[in-house]
Image (cartoon, rainbow, N blue to C red; front, side, top):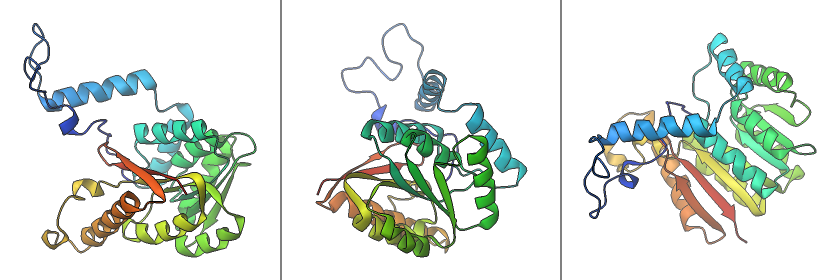
Length: 253
């Protein structure tokens, strides 16, 4: 749930190949560091594809006014998810982690008229801010905000399933718990999206090398979430290599 100016490509995708004339690219162009190329590509993508608009910018400002953490889904991650939902024609989804409503607006827009999003938020103050965001975006008829522990709310939502998709963007240590529910309640052809699945840059590490008592269970949860989706024959999964990582999986059977 961290939006720290998303990087659009992982470094290995931009390393020069042997046949290239060097790290600066074609002859005649000035040399560029990997960092400067990443920043240039990010700036280009943001400028060209315009992942935010006035409504989403207002949500960010509203969150700031309420002293909420700046941890909404990354701009390009959110746009990618919106495009996929539109392409698939999904109409009924669940979101874990409403925050101020940023990702919920993207999802609700993509679901279109007749679609519905069930957005789960543990913090009642955050939930009210999210409701305000949905109202001002003209999407309150497409979104129901549920307040409470996600594991408990999900059980209540089971009777409304199966669902077309779920976006998980909450406490990382419980990602496997939310995946348990998703595996049973997302229909064939439906999707699971998980945010921050690079574990704030630590997902590759052996857990024995992590001594922070907050970070360690979060990384353990993300590692389990990723590996279970990658190894589950009922799903086909991948990870979008942005700065924070967005895991995406479609149910095959």
